[in-house]
Image (tube, rainbow, N blue to C red):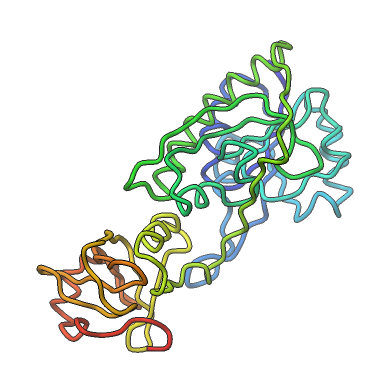
Length: 311
């Protein structure tokens, strides 16, 4: 059994933290500060904070570890054997990386060195990769560049969204971290350096990334819809109002001008730069997500329209 400090914020970290809490002493949990959310913009705690408080674990929420000497001093006082980091969202300075005798271990949702950065699950779907995976690495000052301790692969299915793929990777990552930590503590693992020449990077996703450019091929747009589910979602504009696209299917046998809505069977498809996109679920501004058939029942003039900000 080791004395650990856990660092993470989103639900993706919870399976790993739960698995480790069953075998090790958890000295404290570090997570990001509460953030405004919802229509009322009320301060909302990250999922990791909720999990930790429910178990009576000490929780700390510094805004930065680089500019908060008190947080670093608190970490030092906790005297952890190791620090486990899963989607924390803050940079660990050298004095933190060097603090625990067994180092800082990070679970990253890609097959490193591919997709270093904050959005590896979305990047794998966006690029049409047939598989991705999870990697446990020993953290260094360069983000996501530390030596690899263990890695497992996971297929990406045609219907996968960032949510469904993320859930599987979280479960797989929990099993991998638990087993890797056992072996690491026992001195059974020799870290393997990453090949920097094979490194790729994925940027942070913003809400603006969700806007659909109908000039792009239908295949790319469909991947974007899945990659950005549930957040930030994908959207276009109709009659100057926001229209979210929840699910769609590529129709390479159809063609129409980019953004033009055409009738197909009982539904609708939208022309793109290459092929068409059959709409399956849409969400008008201020309404709930609904099947395209239900939307067309109330908006028959949608057929023949041109979608987009400039339409």
